[in-house]
Amino acid sequence: MTHDSDPRNELLRLRASIDNIDAALVYMLAERFRCTKQVGVLKATHEMPASDPTREIEQVARLRRLALDADLDPAFAEKWFNFVVAEVIHHHEQAANGR
Image (cartoon, rainbow, N blue to C red; front, side, top):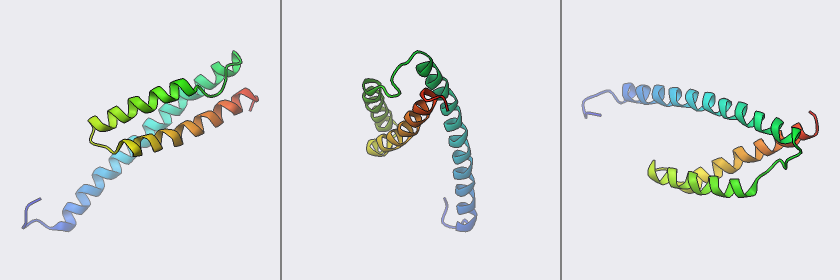
């Protein structure tokens, strides 16, 4: 940003970028849940447990590394992952109970 530019225009430009990124995140998250729903059905069909603690540990480590590479707080990435996984496990439990 230059010193003589209108900060309101810059703010609008930045917010438009944020809005686009938020939209992309929502669509990516929806796609992720479509995939995990299929995993839940597969697990329910074959009477596999809803959660996989070993995979979750591996994923946390992987996402923390990715966060570092992306200059994102690894603790935040882990919190986000734990939040998403809790919802995924809930969906898997529902699938196992035939809901």
